[in-house]
Image (cartoon, rainbow, N blue to C red; front, side, top):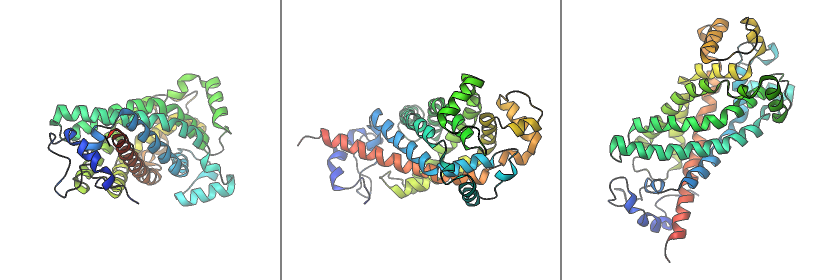
Amino acid sequence: MELRSGSVGSQAVARRMDGDSRDGGGGGKDATGSEDYENLPTSASVSTHMTAGAMAGILEHSVMYPVDSVKTRMQSLSPDPKAQYTSIYGALKRIMRTEGFWRPLRGLNVMVLGAGPAHAMYFACYENMKRTFNDVFHHQGNSHLANGIAGSMATLLHDAVMNPAEVVKQRLQMYNSQHQSALSCIRTVWRTEGLGAFYRSYTTQLTMNIPFQSIHFITYEFLQEQVNPHRTYNPQSHIISGGLAGALAAAATTPLDVCKTLLNTQENMALSLANISGRLSGMANAFRTVYRLNGLAGYFKGIQARVIYQMPSTAISWSVYEFFKYFLTKRQLENRAPY
C-alpha cells in the first residue's frame, strides 16, 4: 500500500505545516488539492534526515553489492585470465560456480558498517545546505546551483567515512584476494601500509564524487520538477528520477572511478606491467598508469557494470530515503498534534 501525502491520516499534519511552505506560507495544498510534500521535509529534524539516510545507504549497498563486486573486477587493468568477464550475469554465474556461492558478497559487512553513518551525514548535510543555499540564490525557490553545491559539500562528509570502507571492500572483491575477511584485511593494510593507505584514494574519490553528486542531485531535482511538479509523495517519481540521475552521473565519472579502483586495490600485475615499484599514489599518477596500460579505452573499463550498478542503486536510495523522511516526519508531527 502506498503512503500518499494526501491520505486522511496526514491531513492534520499538512495543516500544521502550512506556515513552512516554500511559496511563502500560502497553504499546504496544490492545484489538485493534494498536500505539498515539500512542506514535510522543510521542517524535518536532523535526526529524521540522518535516520532516513542511514536506511537508504544500507539498503542501497546491500541489494546492489554483488553487482558492485563484478564492477570492481571488470575495472581491473590487468585481470587474471580466470577473471575476465564479458557480462555481469556471466561474471556472477562464473564467480559463484568457481569461487563459492557467497563469494560476490565478501566485504559486504564492512560496507554496511560504513554506509549507515556515511549516508546519515550525507543526506542530513545535503538537506540543510540545499535549504540554506536556495534561500541565498533563489529566495526559497529551487536553484540547481544550490543543489549542486549542497551535494558537493555533503560528499566531503560522506567520503571521509566511506573511503576506508571502500579500500577494504575492493581488496576483498578482487580475484584471488589474499584477504579472507574484512578484519584480516584491515590488520594487514594497517601493518604493511599504514593508516595513510585507507585514504590514499581520498582525493581521487572526492574528485570523482563531487562531480558525480553534483550531476546526480541537479538531475534528480530537475526530473522531480518535470515528473512530480507538486512534490507529492510519489514512489514512482522518486525511482525514475533517482535511477536516471544515477545512470547519467555514473557514465560521466567512470574514468575517475577506474583510477580510484587502481589506487584502492594497488593491483600488483598492473603496477608490475607499468614498471612501478612500491605503492601508486595520487590521481595524476593513476591517470597516467591507466593510459599507459590500456590507452583511452582503459578509462571506460567496467562502464556498463557501473551504470547498471548505479541506476538501481540510486533509485533504491532515493525511494527508501523519501519514504522514511516522509513517514518519520509525519509520525513526529502527528504525535505533537493536540487531540
